[in-house]
Every structure is written in C-alpha cells, then in structure tokens.
Length: 246
Image (cartoon, rainbow, N blue to C red; front, top):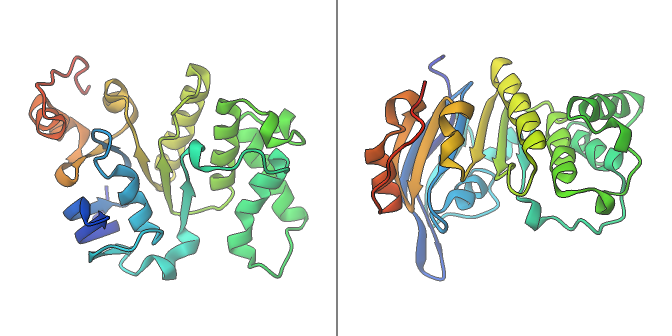
C-alpha cells in the first residue's frame, strides 16, 4: 500500500442546531484501501461523507482530496447516496440514470454520445442490470436500484468512491455482487469508502476500518484495529467480535 493519502481530514467539527455531530475529527485515508466507516446511529458517518463532498459546511477544520479542496478534485470522486435520499418516482430509465454519470467529464453543454452510451451499457452489464436498461427506475426493486446507482458511479471513472450504506435493504445476491465490484475497484488501485452497519461482515469485506462516534475512535487496517476494545469504545456496550479477521 502506497504512502499517498487519498483523503485527509483535519480538526473537522460539524454541528446541527448547535449540537456537534462530528467533533475534532482527524483522519488520513491511504490511496487504494477498501474502508468501512462504522458506528452507532447518529455517530456522524453520513455527515463525514457529505463533509468530504462539500455538501455540508463544517464549523471548523478542513478536508483535502489528494491534497486539494474537493471542488478542485470533483472529477476524481464518485458518490453513491443512501437509497432513501433519492426520488425514485422521477420518470427516467436505468440507462439514462447511468449515463448521467458521464456528465461530470463532459460538462453540461456537451451531450453524451455513442462512446458514453457504450460506457453506460458496459457498467450496466458489470452490475448485472443490462436486461433492465429501458426499465423505469421506479419499477425496479430496491436491490436493482442500488445496482443502478453503483453503475452510475462506475461510469464516472473516479479515483475515490464514497458510498453511504450501499448494502441497506438489498438481498444477499445483490450484496455479494456489490462487494465483488468494490473489491475489483480496490484491486485497480481505487479508494473505496463505505458507510457500513453490519459488523459481522467487516473482516470479510474490508481491509481498512474507521470507528466513529461523533469523535474518531480509531482508524487503520482491519487486522490491527477491528477488536473488542474499539467496538466497546464506539458502541458504549461490551462487544465481542464473533468473527475474527483472517
């Protein structure tokens, strides 16, 4: 693993209505890791992702993407939001949603052409959704919708992928398909950061983990820091890890 830092967070504090959601968080995420962000509800996991993306303005601190502000690195970052935050009734097809992922590279004036459509179809094939390319997104199941959003992120050809609970409400087959794609991204040298809630699968799915509960509890390789002590500190109850990292 190289020394290059994909995302650096310094002294990040975020508050909603004067209540701190993230408090003085320092974080260095190396390039080329597949990282889970874990912690209880209200721990600030989604807020951390949105702070990296500049969606939320912090009270204090800074976030750098490959050493620069996000606005200068926008084309290098792809984002898969929580399914619940998306208007699934919007009248558009699966292929159109995925093709939208190419807009960042094209700019708003140039329309997607044959090359972009081909890339979108390849991304749909990669996530097993090619037969559904002309289907309205509102007619897809939760797992299928999540695969479409993953395909949209893939077509952006980013360096960093931020995903907010991509396994939420999907079936086991979809979960396995998604994690295989995320592992392929990591093998290709990409950095993948996933808000994740299933502690049992952390050692199997991820090689890096950040424990968060308003403050950063710990961050590092799963094999080194995914343990009872950090789980107990993060969740405030005695935790026993029934699946040990291999």
